[in-house]
Image 1 (cartoon, rainbow, N blue to C red):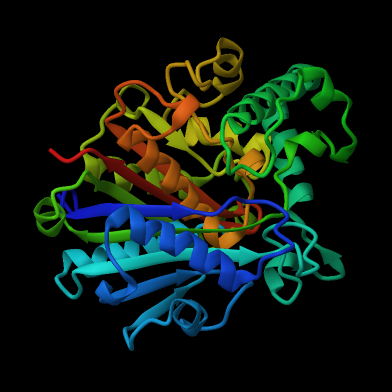
Image 2 (tube, helix red, strand yellow):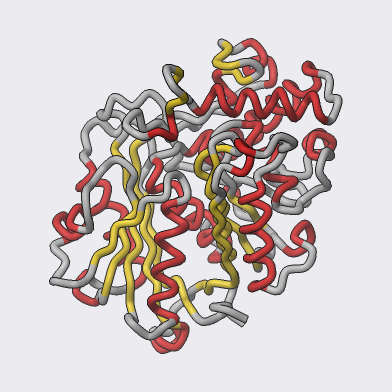
Length: 393
C-alpha cells in the first residue's frame, strides 16, 4: 500500500552536533552530504534533484546548491518547523516513487549558535510565538503540558518529576555512546532533580540544547539500489499531520496528547502494515525537545496505553535493553536540535541501526525503525511526522 518498499535509502551522513563555532552552514552541508555521497557510492553529479530543510539558516534552494556546486538541478527548500527534515524526506520519496527523479539528495542543516536564538523553535517574527504582549516560548508551553498531564492522571508531582528525570538520564546515557552527540556524559537522577529550574516542573536537564549541525540522505529506486549491489534500507510507511489550532479553540481539549502525533502514526502504521507498534517497532527515535514530550509520545505512538507511560518508564521499557528502545542516540535532548537537521538525524540513527552500524548502542535483530518529529505544541497547533524504515523484503 502507498510507497511501501518502493523507495530505497542508499547512503546517509551526519555531522557532529553542538557548538560548532569554527563552521558555518555551508561547512555543515558539505560535511553531511559528502559523508552521504561516500556511503552511497555516488557523486554530486549523479543527483537528479535535492530537497533542503532549514528553518533559519538559508533562503531558497540555492543555500544547498551553492556549497555543493550542484549542476542546474531542481532544489526545493522545505520549512515545517521541527518536522521539516521528515517533511523534506517524504517529499523526496514521493518524487522517486513517482518516477520524476531517480537519485535524490535530502539535506537539513542549521547554524543556531551564532544566531542569537535563545531556544530551538522560537521565531520572534511570527504570530506563533506571541500572544499579545506575551512571548510564547517552548519551555513555558511544555511545562504547562507537564502540569496538565500530572493533574489529569493524578500523578504526584514528585513521582512525575522523577519519571521525567529517568528519561533524561536514559537519553544522556545513550548519548554517551554516540560520538557525534552534542552532550556525551552520563548524568544521575540526583543531578536532574537538583538542576536549575527553567519552567516548573522542567529543569535544565529536561530541556534540549540549542545546536549546530547537519544531516543528509540519498534516496533512489529499489531497482537501482539492487543494481548497485550494496546494502540499503527501504521506506515502509510515513504519516504527516498538521492541526489548525483545534486545541486552542475547543473548550474541552485535555492537553495530554498530541492529536497530530496520533494521526501521523496511524497513517504510517497503516502503510507499513504495523498493527502492534509495541511489538513490531524495534527502535524509535522521537522528538524529545523536553522530557515531557517524550513521555507523551510513548502514548501517542501506541507504545503504551494513555496514562501508563510513567509506569513503563519505571519498568525500563524504553531503555537500550528495554522492550521498545527509544532515542538510542541520545535524542534531541543529548544529540542536539539544529531544527532543520533534526528529522534527518533521526533517520540517520534508524538507518545505522538497520544497517548494524550503531556501535556500542547497536540493538539486536532490528527490522523496523521509526523516526518521529513534532513542531509546535498542542497549545499553538503542531505538526506530527512519522517515518518508518526497514530492511528490504
